[in-house]
Length: 240
Ligand SMILES: Nc1ncnc2c1ncn2[C@@H]1O[C@H](COP(=O)(O)OP(=O)(O)O)[C@@H](O)[C@H]1O
Ligand SMILES: [Mg+2]
Image (cartoon, rainbow, N blue to C red; front, side):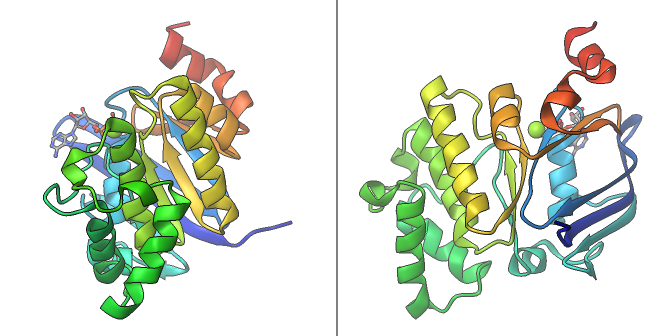
């Protein structure tokens, strides 16, 4: 079955001085997929998310989301259009509770009225397993709690596309499995996911498709197992 294109990136270019982050990158993301992005440290994965979300300006290229050209659309409008994002370094309002952080997200990026956000936040707290910690100050959460909360804050914005930047780093194997299950649940709820991760187990067991980036180019794309076995990816990761 063919799915509609949700995100379409065409001829994206970006350099920081002499460092090329994106060298004429083009790719599409289809509704309902979980797409993994792998690549060495410094390859430009987080910067790519920044360009998709609008926090980092591209040098050239076109980004379409849900059929609209959003290349020069401000970040907050992209968020209101349904693009949700987690950050590799979470920055919640540490002096606010877990639930209040999510309320803010649901109002400012999710477009909910104050009267509506209580029920919605309750649902997202349950979905992400944070209900028992809802009244805790966000700054007091454990590492696992902070990571769950980062995902919960992004989900509170009611995204149709969720960009996840390295939630698995530093977690135990069992905790990684929990995130794999959670991302599958996100997908099953109808949200398309693009997930950057180094922990290969997540990419092999939770994604439908992988894009490998290095040197500003997409060096391999396709079925996860096929991608990690390509010569190009093995060379970048193993020096083989
Ligand atoms: N604002 C910036 N100014 C200059 N260089 C940057 C900036 N942001 C990132 N970089 C550089 O761009 C490269 C890619 O960074 P990043 O996107 O964080 O990579 P990744 O997420 O793949 O590890 C790195 O060399 C980083 O130092
Ligand atoms: Mg990064």
